[in-house]
Image (cartoon, rainbow, N blue to C red):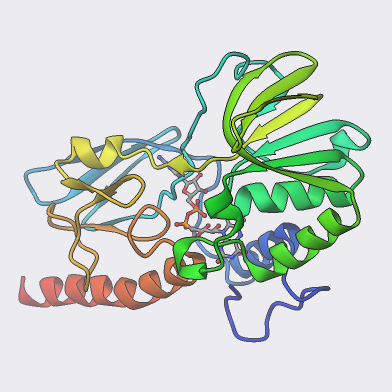
Length: 276
Ligand SMILES: Cc1cc2nc3c(=O)[nH]c(=O)nc-3n(C[C@H](O)[C@H](O)[C@H](O)COP(=O)(O)OP(=O)(O)OC[C@H]3O[C@@H](n4cnc5c(N)ncnc54)[C@H](O)[C@@H]3O)c2cc1C
């Protein structure tokens, strides 16, 4: 995850979110990178000159090539159950400190849910993790299993009686004070609840890409843009993709792929200039 080997010195085995963000921010500051924050790309036109015109919330830019690295967090998935729009229900977890000594439910089977359940339980929330058996028993990192540095302390919380794991089938409803689930044995289970985190994955917003004519295909869980697996160029010439919303979706690939393709994109542009 570090920009240069050895540059990130976490306090524990793995860096925290804050340590990682600070590392990236200082990399940007130290190298005076030309990054505009708080600026959303809201539209892109392809011009006859083979260039793109990029419209943002602050400005407009011309570009010969575009690399989309928009992540896959735009649309959190929903359970579509009664009570999901209550203010106490969240589809994103940031930190546990507001929920100390509260009854917290986390629904989900991936790393986001596992991490949220762990942090809530460690910081004194009375936490229940509602998880499908296949996710709880999944030990294959390639199939999205919980990372071992999350599972080990999570199991310690369970063994210490601070975290309850419910192997569930469905969440039926959420009310101001309670949540009702069906367990995998088919029994109805109603538990007290102050806050619920529904962390069942999220999908990218592919609207900008599709408007430009980029083709997509169904992936394992969600829709993925079609691209050349070597160059990561889409069917629209000059338009590339990388990161969490492609098949190379984990952070290692989200770092490795741009490291490989950005020099190739630059090389291609230089070759174009030389022949003009
Ligand atoms: C809770 C959690 C824990 C994780 N822990 C780990 C871990 O320990 N190890 C690991 O390998 N991976 C981990 N991951 C996965 C990792 O975060 C992703 O693989 C990685 O962030 C993907 O990087 P990305 O650049 O593709 O997307 P992102 O990091 O999601 O970045 C995309 C960026 O694009 C911006 N954006 C989107 N649309 C627009 C637009 N129209 N205009 C301007 N900007 C836009 C977004 O705001 C966002 O900042 C974790 C993920 C989560 C949610």
